[in-house]
Amino acid sequence: MLLPALPLLKKARAKKYAVPAFNINNLEILKAVIEAAIAMKSPVIVQTSEGAIEYAGMDYLIAMACVAAEAPIPVVLHLDHGKDLKVIRQAIRSGYTSIMFDGSALPYEKNVVMTKRVVGWAHAKKISVEAELGVLTGIEDLVNVDARDAALTNPDQAAAFVEATGCDSLAVAIGTSHGAYKFQGKTHLDIQRLKEIAARVTIPLVLHGASGVLEDVTKLAEHYGASLGRARGVLDQDIQTAIQCGVAKVNIDTDLRIAFTAGIRKAVADLPKAIDPRKLLEPANDLMTQVAKRKMKLFGSAGKA
Ligand SMILES: [Zn+2]
Image (tube, rainbow, N blue to C red; front, side, top):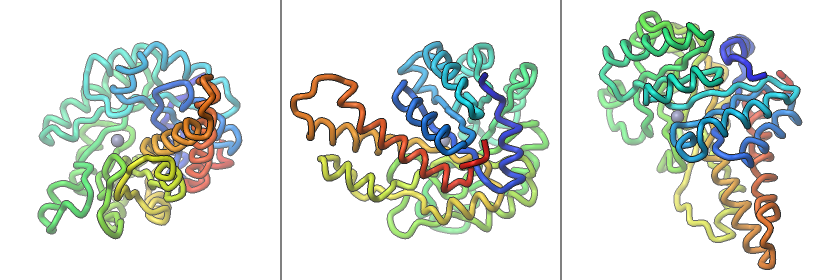
């Protein structure tokens, strides 16, 4: 059975580890993630963006997640970056056990009103809500203190926001950004800001844009023809520090995408005679499982199922 997210996240924050949340949009990614979670005895959140729903169809995704949830580990199905109220309502009705409402692009007051509304719908069905405050933008784009303060999550405002909305977990902006090109030079997060947020906000905190852009996997993809340029992610050490400071859910999408890309490219190059999709997908599936396992070790969720 798919489980609610909140008890898992509360326990994770209390015990200073993070539950991994992997974006899925097909059977292969889902199976890779679940296989890793079983092997590592880790709780796991599978999450679908609105784009994934558009690609695969919500009914297919829910049906697959329900089968996945028969695994002997806790599995949550979460809506990632819900913005479209129709999609959010449909997800709440149809079997998702966790919802994100992303009002981060709205003016503060509007974000409060909309988040509160979604919290009302979700709580009526005992579903928890992740909200977001601040802009997920690479820290290097914020050239001075004022720019930083305007974009990143403000600790006092975060406390007021959680109080006003009743949200269950909060995605914070501390210098991470989505995608494979997060930093130019040295990567660094605003850990001091995170500490200040965590001192005022006791609900579980969530880190988006947290892929590491793993060097070995990126090199493998490039060896087989991918052109990823100066892709650069968050350092493992920064992730671990963030988890010690209150982050209880870490989202991973890019690292699985790169693993998938590396595996597919390798199979196509190594197996010119293969026409069986299963043979062509096998290395991608294996690489995604390996990457998911590494994340579970890094986040400290291994052995916590
Ligand atoms: Zn995100």
